[in-house]
Amino acid sequence: MKFFLYLCLSASLLCTVVFSHHGGEHDDEHTDHTDDHKHDHGDHKHGDHSGHHKNHGHHGKGKHDSYHHVHFNESTACHKIAPYNAQFAFKFYKQVADSKPSENIFFSPVSISTAFAMLSLGAKSKTQDEILEGLSFNRSEITKEDVHSGFQHLHHVLNDPNSELQLDSGNALFIDTKLKLLQTFLDDVKRNYESEAFSSDFTNSDETKKQINSYVDKKTNGKIPELLSSVDRDTILFLINWIYFRGKWEIPFEEKYTSEGDFHVDENTVVKVPFMRRTGMYNALLSENVTVVQIPYKGNTSALFILPKEGKLGYIEQNLEKSAIKKWKSKFHRMSLNLALPKFSISTTLNLKEQFNKLGVTQVFSDAADLSGITDQAKLKVSGAIHKAALSVDEKGTEAAAATVLEIMPMSLPPTVTFDKPFVCVIYNKETHSTLFMGRIVNPVAA
Image (cartoon, one colour):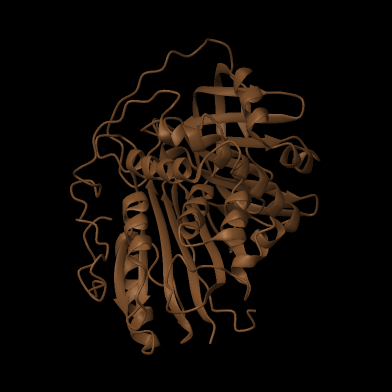
């Protein structure tokens, strides 16, 4: 019998509040970057494996006590993988944008890359090659060891408790009690991805679903209460990645200035949206084809809001890549703006199996899959991978701001920039050169 491994990615970003989760039903047919766990689950530890992985609990801000402040240079491990992660992020964005030309899209490239890189530890031969190449890693330029050490370092930096970056991320394996994983795989995923491991009785699908949903609910502070709606009895392994970002604007918007306005979805559709408004100093580019405004969060993370001129959305998206953003940023001016940004919440779902097939990653989803690095007890293939993501933008974030910030403003009347038609958003961490989230907002009030 062919048994199934299921990739469940969960990602949440708050405050902007953003949260995202990944999961999905079993398929029976089965079928660059820009400058750019909290407490243990406690239940159902993977006791059947002597080498099971269990993180030792994150404390304080929900990050690991053993993390230390990291100094960077050009050979830093996470910087070695950054160009490839950037290439994947923009390539993946353009592919999704092409397939959904008039819909909201939103996803976490770093979450998707982390999950598939971790999966590649258990893949062999062509299956492994396809996964790494699908993630844009050039095997003639970077070794597998550098790939995994890069993700290991990235995880440490993003979870550094000494950083102002309000982010937690992690990985987990839920393993059927009758399945014994290879110790080398367990060791590798713990060392490189700090993955926790838990035993589950997949014959009791309701209990397994409850166990996994409870774990993810806790890790995402209740933002993803139900990752899974069902668990197929043929599934024997769940691989979960989660990232939870509680970003706080460096300078918040004031709620008293938020007021309703028109958002032009297309030439025939106008919806009412609350617009956050603030006059202040921003790094921005106002050009013939596009307006780009950078809004910083605390902790070396910023959001780029990219507003194409009328009729230029497709052109901007097709040319959206690291070099384009670098060029825009080189033309930034520190200027005073009357900024109006929609206050909104959206959620989107991506079928990663479908998208990765387009990237040439096909074998891992087929009966020809070689995942023998995970277990020698059963023939595995990935039955599905669904990425569910949500974005919510508000004035302050998850915590009220109490600081007073003084800005020196020019005497001249500042220009007004209103994000009142479809725009693109890129949220990136400068310290690691990592894109955390990307999206296109076509309709801020769409479900």
